[in-house]
Amino acid sequence: MRAAVLGSPIAHSLSPVLHGAAYAALGLDGWTYSVIECDEAGLPGFIASCDARWAGLSLTMPLKRAVLPLLDRTEPLAADVGGANTVIFADGERRGYNTDVPGMVTALAEAGVSAPASATILGAGATACATLAALRAIGLTTAVVHARDQARAGDLLAAADRLGVAVELRPFGSQVRAGDLLISTVPAGAADFYTERALAGSPRPTAVLDVVYSPWPTPLAQAGARSGAAVISGFDLLLHQAARQVELMTGIEPAPVSAMRAAGHSELSRRTRLAATPH
View (cartoon, rainbow, N blue to C red):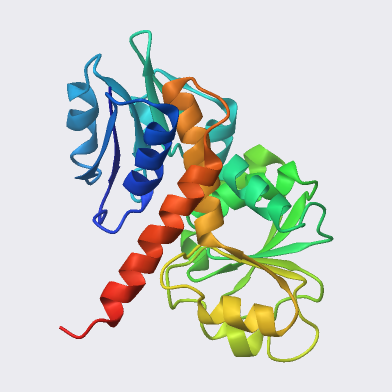
């Protein structure tokens, strides 16, 4: 059976390592998982070309929203979030799921974050929409969102309305509230100045999740650790959302999370060594 991760850019993806480790641990010798560069324009044609040899697809930016009109069936969670990061081919149908949400809930729970008093999200894109759903799952019905461009936050506000989560939009760079769970959903480097503005003084967040996993630790994560906050890596989110994808694609539960974690850490260490090697 075949599976793949699609996106643009996608060459950096760690997903093949995680899924490949899962297949090996599960003894799925005939399964392959590849990396395919694909933008929004190319997505309809690619999905149409997937035959019975395909088990499923993992989708990253910018495809999570673009895939929705191409699906035969979409789980309610993915519809509410406004994005599917997983497509399963089954019984002649294309079925869409969002595993970012349960992946984030599990990653937070592993770090002991299960019932935060309040939360602040940095960024207002597709990952921020999934974050709203994860916050709802752990009992929060309100969130502050620091948007880099508030005029482009329409999709987030629509998702918040579907999810029943009240959102307060603030300018990017605003002070983070005391005791918050702080979740950064922006690309590497975009949240660096929060290390001073949000974490250098008092009050400070009680927990910090940065969806970036390489390079790690990010300046935000380092500052969070220094301030005594619980720190959750983007790798933990990636790992647990991938584990759920493996379960959906293979029909085997539970996914071999320990084997996937070990393979992912090994590959990240290899990449760090390679980046440090003079060329």
